[in-house]
Length: 252
Image (cartoon, rainbow, N blue to C red):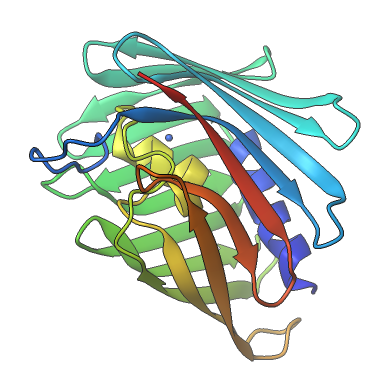
């Protein structure tokens, strides 16, 4: 399976069924919130774009995704109670309501669809389980300095067989695009993993593990960034695909 297609399908599947970012109290640079993301190929062909909207507490309230023609593909609206995210609505139709008990968050969409998120004592997402009509997705996260250093994904089919991957990451020392967003960390990581850690991913080691359908495979990808004068990334280029991601911010 083409890796880029697999990654897109995985994110899309998770979206259909975002603790506050870590900050240095001594920071004196300008506070900026990610406003738009544009993904294009090396030939500047636009693939798609995303728009982020926030409330007065820097919490994400709406995310919209568009295709290359500007047509709306996806919307998510988020509702909070106190510091907790309690509801999201996907495409104005699919409702997710979240119940928090200790370090576990649960959403039951139907008798066939259940989601759980396990947090550590620092409020970081460490495990996600999605049960969908007998199929299951399990995602595990390991952190260092607010960054995911290891991420595993396993999809087990109801009829038998498992597709599994493992990713290991390295980072720069600059602020990530969602650094100042105060939406609970478990949702940011679950939905926007690549832009919601403390710093920016500069290397990704990606592996497919043996199963009945896909041969074992391993590759390493590197990402090169351009930054603005305040240290926020404005552009990311992939060494392999040459895909370019551009980030635009609003200043508070």
